[in-house]
Image 1 (cartoon, rainbow, N blue to C red):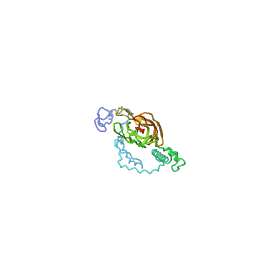
Image 2 (image 1 turned 30 degrees about the vertical axis):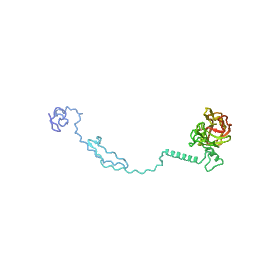
Image 3 (image 1 turned 120 degrees about the vertical axis):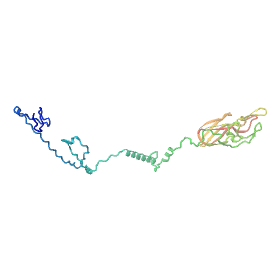
Amino acid sequence: MSTCVNCGHELGVGRFCTSCGRPAAAPPAAWRTDTAERQPATPPSPPPPPRPTQPPLTPPVGSVPPKPRFPLFADEVDGAPRPVDSSPVPPPPPLAPTAPSHHRHRRPWGPWVAVAAVLVLVAGLGIWLLTDDDGSTATDPGPDRSANRSASHSPSKSPPSDLVPAGDVTADSTAEVPATAPPNQDVQGNRVDFAAANMLDGVPETCWRMAGDGTGKEITITLPGETVVSSVGLVNGYAKTARDAQGRELDWYHGNRRVLSVEWVFDDGTTLSQDLEDSTAVQSIDVDDVRTSSITLRLVSVSAPGTGRAARDNTAISDLSIISAS
């Protein structure tokens, strides 16, 4: 065995030195049998010189520097790490002032529309307040303006709240009569008077009466307030009967004079005529809702006195009836 020409290590049977890896030279006895085309062993090439590092490039003015990062594997060349520029990043230069834009920012148009609508409403209200119903201005009365105003502002026909409530208002009224007969006594000796208030008490056995014929006389009835009258009536005589000590019946209705016809006169001049029958009940007629505060009862026709023991020369009315519709 021979030794390696490179390191001197004893060569084995292989073609390369087991110590340094260099090919073993052929033994001197076999050099003539080796082929002429075999390449001679070339010495190992020296390692390449290190690549010179380039200075870091200065970024152009106005450019944004990259964000700092951790070194990557790609930064290493030939096993040597690439230097990372750790110099402070210069601040970006101030931006040049831009020319003013001629494009105006469009504002929302909703508030302007609302303001315009309010102005239109206010203007319309002012015009309406300054004009009448016919369109003429308030400062120009015109020839027929007063007539139009009276027609358009006529009072309502609905009854106001100060009218007398609906119902029978007879008891709340008062009466003035042309005369009153003096008091007397009934068959039991009790005093009986014939005042005007007896026509308003709702008791048929009491009455107002005057001596003699009452034809053409007037009774004035004052109501408790302004009243819409819907009905009037009366009991047209002394609606009372009695028995004397002998048990005989006395008919005061037919014994006294009876009212045969009357006229009802209201404040506005409305006049209603009424013919009366031979009856002791209340005889009423309807009124077309006349508004009045008083009523005049005119006695148009009165009967003659009756006959018999109950005959008396007096004109009598037992009761009145006045009904309010308000």
